[in-house]
Length: 214
Image (cartoon, rainbow, N blue to C red; front, side):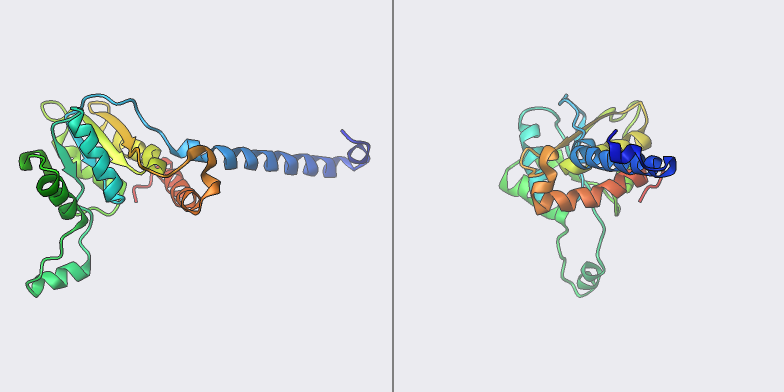
């Protein structure tokens, strides 16, 4: 301890110590939070590959690579949610394709994957927890017992938590992100994309840990 610090009253020394401790803790969180958010599992063969909503281009590309490599014989796409504009256009006789429908068309029509191997789940979802609940009836003993989950890299730990919570120990959950994902866990602060993802995912991960499902 410096002479100046030693000369301070005990209360001020404690306050200074706690301030320095908080600063050190903040620095640790700052440098490691990117690595906390990312949690990928080793690849294994699975019953299906579940492409979660959002980031469709990168996730669809990754799903194709995994399918061609033989990791699963079935691709399942999240239906996302239907926006009011799409509903109103449908009433006027104009179908506005969803992101999942566009992804399926790319997989089947452009990349020539078997139509029977690509499925869009029925229903509507607005978050990862709902996506986990939506596929739950398809899993378990006598059904699918292993899934590869594709999402964004900084959302992998949160997705893994949501799916383990929803599906339980009877289903093997293999969480992955696209090899094209630009997120750098070790240097997330160097790009606007990285900062945005950390600011977006960190509170959501904390909320999931606290038991919220939104």
